[in-house]
Image: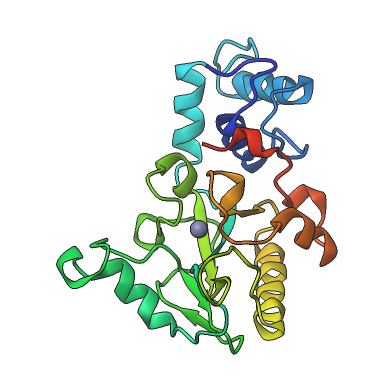
Length: 236
Ligand SMILES: [Zn+2]
């Protein structure tokens, strides 16, 4: 159940759902404040639910049904490969989808839709269309083990993210990769103005993508409306 002062990633999802359904125009904070409660009440009224501003199972089920395939989050990842090593995008697909016996992870599809190689080349490794839905056929699963965080998301990964000796986490983006990523983020936001852009390390206790995504987004001019505003304490 989510109620006033709840503070977790479920509230992130709730705020994104309320935003998609035009009941909430605040920032995505993961904190259930008065504005969030007002939005919940207004949503409950529209769907003839008890308008108490509390998100119990009934309200959550209606929200989930209405937003089942909505595009809410663009995640940025790194491949955790060493600085300067030119790993082709197809190797990422192979690594994720080859059977474990052949050195892969044995997944049915790669964890990302797009990969940015060292040259800055953007390679689509799993197809999607450009509507506002993440249909089942276009879902990837970059946040390992979390349906909550993957269902309404798309994932992009840059090659790199570790020092050459693999001992340290490092922002190894080449100038070309940074430029491609910037263009990619800004174009995605043009087509999907209500989503947020998030680093993998904002939702799980990981270093990926080896840089501070909210700071970088601010630097390239992304509005706080499209930046996840919660602290690392909310990570699962
Ligand atoms: Zn990641």
